[in-house]
Image (cartoon, rainbow, N blue to C red; front, side, top):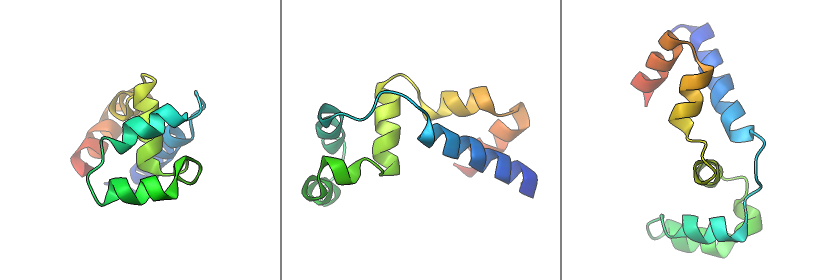
Length: 90
């Protein structure tokens, strides 16, 4: 992958995680906890909702719960060749 392609993909991915949308709610946190295996579930339960708001995995969960999946976002915001390169990395 070319450096400029890598940087473009990284920028779009960062935009996905920063996107505006409904803020995470405590119900999202409880639902997300149920998707985690131990010991991660116990760790984040102890950390709590407020401390977990910035966790990338939690942010993705909330975005997907609100109808914005990562794959679709990347498909919409990357060129065809960039999207293919991103898929190959995942």
